[in-house]
Amino acid sequence: MQRRYDPTYYLATSRLPPDVRPGVHALYGFVRIADQLVDGSRRAPHPAARKEALDRWEGELERGLSRGRPSHPVIAALVDAGRRHELPLEELHVYMSSMRVDCAPVRIETWRELERYMRGSAAAVGLIMASLLGAPAAESWTFARLGMAFQLTNFLRDVREDYALDRLYLPREDLERFGAREADVAAEVATPALRAMLAFEVARARRLFAESASAIPSVAPSIRPGMRLARSLYLRLLDRLEAVDFDVLARRPRVAPSQFGRATVDALRAAR
Image 1 (tube, rainbow, N blue to C red):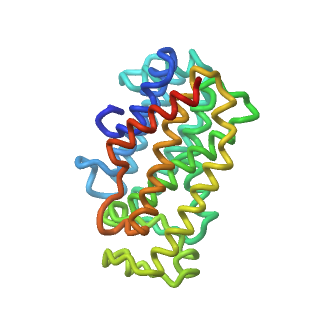
Image 2: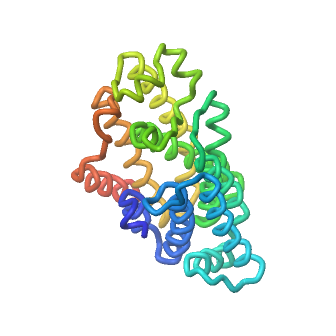
C-alpha cells in the first residue's frame, strides 16, 4: 500500500531495519485507509456518512486493542507492532479526530488553529513513530514536530488539490497579512501576494525541520539512514517550491526522479 500511494515514504521505509518495517507499513496502512474514507474515489458522498465510516474504522481499532482479535489484516499487523514495540496507539484516536475535520469544508483562521489540526493529523503519528524507532522519551515531541514539518510541506505542495476538495489549510491571518485572497486560490492565479505568503510558509516549514533535527541522532545508527532520506526528500520538495517561485497552482511541484537517487546516496554517506 505504501509503495503504491507514497513512494517517498516507501523509499525511506525501505532503508529502515527489517524488524521495524512491518510496524511502519501497518501504521501507514491504518492512516491511509482513514484518508481514503475521507478523500478516496469511493468515499461516501455526504460528510455524515464519511464520519460514520471513520467511526467504524476506529471501532475496528478499538476492538483490536481491547480484545486482541482484530478481523482486519491492517489492524492485526498494527496491534502486533504495538505489542512488540510498546507503541502509544491511543494517539490514533487523536489522529481520527483530525480526519473527521476533513469530512466537511476546511478553512483555517490562524496558525495556532493549524497547529492544533496537525497535532492530530501529523504529531500523533510522529509520537508513535518515536516509540517504534526506539527514540528516548525526551525526544518524543521532537518527532511530533518532524511529523508537522512533513505535513506542512504536503499542505504547501497540495494547495490546488486540497482546494478542489473544498479545503484550504493556508491560515486566513497569513493570507491577509500578505494581501492574498482565497479568490486567488480559487482562480488558480499565483499572484505576487500569494507567492509571498507561500514563501513565508515555506520558511515556517524549514524552521520545523530545523527544530526537529535532533530526532535523527536520537535513534540507533541503523535507523538514521531512513530518517535522513525522508527528511532530505522533503527538504528537496521545499527547494522545488522555491524553484518554481511558489507557483503551486499551475502544477503540483514534485521532486525529480534523479533527486531520489541523490538523496539516497547522501543519506547512506551520512550514515558512515
